[in-house]
Length: 157
Image (cartoon, rainbow, N blue to C red):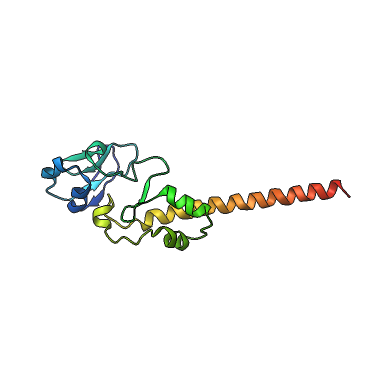
């Protein structure tokens, strides 16, 4: 089913919707819903009879949020900022980040995550992207240091 914005929705259980929608809207939850993952669209959940926008949801929705404090793991309340700090402090793999932050250890995703799914798919991509960025940065710094060393050596001989 497509959202009003045209994006295909991801099916979400009503227990998930009920966990994130403000209580005054619970009476509208009578069937499964779809989640709109378009970050430009204000609609979070929708079906044929109802829709819930960002201001009707009590949870900070990672696929709609901006900034480094976006949630990655709702069960353990780990944000992108937490992961970036862990990588900066020396974590070199997804497993090391998981161990330090406890990412993926929650097991209550159906109610804590706005998509009702395990966050591993999403945080693994994020971690790998930032590990790669850090690795490229380190390589560039090493290359620059080697260039500087060659320059110093060549001018002093």
